[in-house]
Image (cartoon, rainbow, N blue to C red; front, side, top):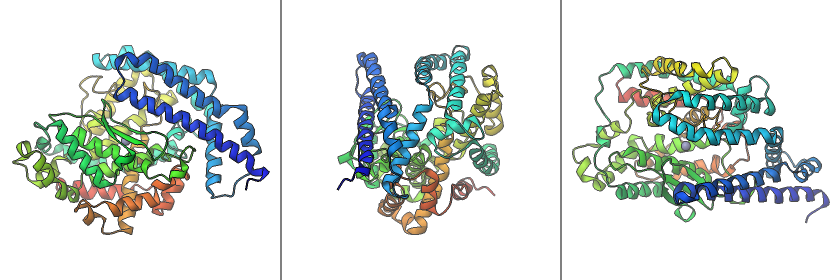
Length: 503
Ligand code: ZN
């Protein structure tokens, strides 16, 4: 029965459902843009996407939404409705604080910056990109001021991707990571380069790569009745409006096994999260992942803690060898395990191994904080980038394309996003440790290609909640602790200590 006081809640839910439908339509068109759309669709599609985004924004910031939020009776704390109202308020507040002209200017500036970045990177030409970044950083600072913060403008930007996190907390996390990682990487870097990853290069038929990857993620529990896999240039996972349609994509290289294989495992991790959200949360703000960091913890968990483990390959390597008898004929399982875990400082973040990856993120985090503080000028950025690359990775940057111009994030208007990759790494080990504590048989099961216990724990403790809890609440509930670097450091130390016989 609907009483009069339930009425605003129901009306609010109806509006939020419409917003969710519009956003899902936008996501579907964007998926199409990146997979099958012919070149001729580019301009029309940009207009369609912008129109849908505008529409969703207008419904959210409308007078009607505001008055519903004002008259809403506070739902019972802890209930789903409470979580829904809390998220609706948060999304609304954030949206109304940003003036429409600023949002439009950011969208325009980044639309211009992205092709400029592509050209600049191709030519390794910093000077043509610098003015774009100058403008984007100014707009980001303005955005932070409008959003508001307690301690630091960076907090306001970080909060967009990782609700509740702050610059101070991220700094603390990196301090803890650095004490182990920096000496360990220097130690490995000083060892002779044996070219451990060699078995991953050769002639690998793309269709067979795809078939193998599909087999593995079917074993993980990816549901093909609610998903599909397609080919793209930059892999991503596309949830199209709820757990009923969660698509993944991959990029293939017939001369190199890693990109497709690990992209499929990575994107499947994101997809398992989305497919596991409580179905009744669909068409509401409760659907989807609670933060970029928690999302990334799942892609990293399935890609790395599972997909680069010895247990995993003890089961899957014989199958892989059967699929590719020619190129892998001479390689034994242990050599292959070492190949997929080669750790070596390299310039390119997206090709970095588990160990060095976080230092790429640390470098970007420190630089973007300095840019927001105006402690670092755009013209000094390339030199600062090179200095940190030298400090953390012992590498001298070859050129700007391999250095400061390598990532699209800043051009795409994403500042405060990078740390979520490292938060995800840290959480991946924290969740995995909690799951194996509850089910000590998980590693042994992985060695039989059986992921039921692991997936079951993740579904029960993380996935089903969607956005119902903020990241801190969820992590504490699932693992008994707030974000904690210790499980991750234990994991890296034991794995790479053994792989490289470190003392
Ligand atoms: Zn990811």
